[in-house]
Length: 232
Image (cartoon, rainbow, N blue to C red; front, side):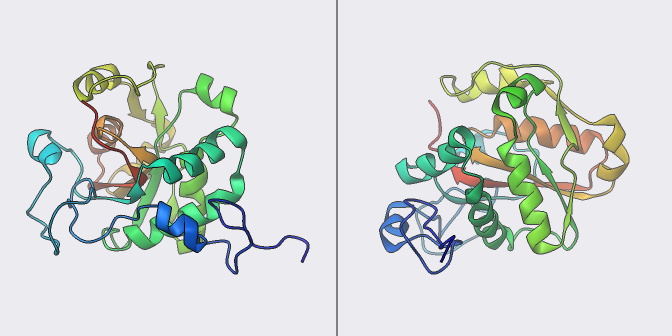
């Protein structure tokens, strides 16, 4: 009665805080059906085939093994993600983590190690938190799996990526991440799952996966909350 469950998308009252109301459910495009096994984007077709990749993954080398995303980065998804990042809606971490665990169940190895995509310390200082780290930590607690919140570090500050092409993003992010030397032993030999809020071109995931593999990770998979339309 004091803290009633609210829809993560619009805050109308619902029976379970981990689920959207019917109206928001219609607006949030959850990815289903035929998907690319590498990046999780929805494709034409009515079945999944581990050997059929989307155009982006056919034309761009992906250093990770498998990938999934919960929903498309449309207006509803964007508003919810920005509510966490800019309006301190930490109540959204639980439903986000719940949805990502359900979507990632088909690709998670038996004993995964979750590692969030890091922020540069200056950006994290301004925002006061890393949303990907909050989600990864909650996922680990919900599923009882390992998580290394500071497994990766941002070596240098990079420009905002939203106005850049995929090729420009890869160039800007080159050598921008590394495994935290204090956590190298945690990463070596493990099956890593990288966690981020939005998958756009894959450049960020590629740089993070490269760093993990160079540090001895056995495999790397990627898990995003939302899959954005590919940049020009």
